[in-house]
Length: 261
Image 1 (spheres, rainbow, N blue to C red):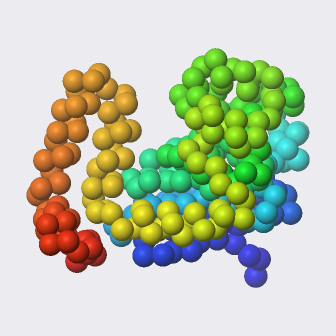
Image 2: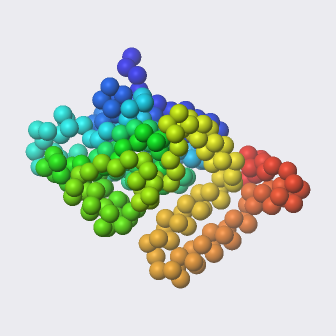
Image 3: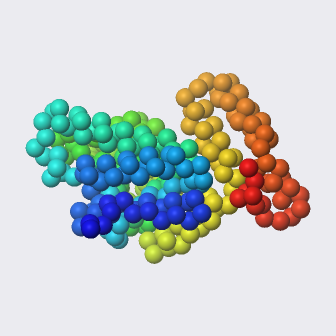
């Protein structure tokens, strides 16, 4: 039996996904994207999901890009279907109700950078390399790069990267806001453990509400977004999670959100 293209590890609802095509530097082909889509669909249905961490197998690449060998001979209609399917998968990732964090361990180019952009935020090893080099192949980014990258780093910087196709290191990615943190490559696993503990320790419904408030509020005028925040804040008092969290604070003990509804 062939090994899965998407490996899963579950630590109390914090799920780590590893894209598993290391010989191809985890390049995104139709098979890998299809398997990732199925995995994400299953995660959508989980009420106990706390967070998703996504990375690439091996020590060379997060995702080096879309699979050029697969794309080379596509017709325009075939290319459109390929992009539409990929966009649907990345949208499914983006719309997960819990935090989604990219763990970038090496090359993060083209479709790989677009995958990272579909995550809520990213951390990178100091060996990471980012870029949108598609113009060097005679095309433009097709998995959301022309839209998500300017929303992350601003239109001028996005056009700099997209129209030159240049690569940037982890330090520059941090400076422009493409990633949130950079750590030595050998410390990335330690950071994974830290994130797993942090994301798994907080009130799960509060974390989901926080993500909803940020994502939905960004597309609304400020007054409407503030009203959304107020509604979600008040809703937090409807269950037992808020009472457990505040009681734990007053009683100077760790909160036990697994016992709260």
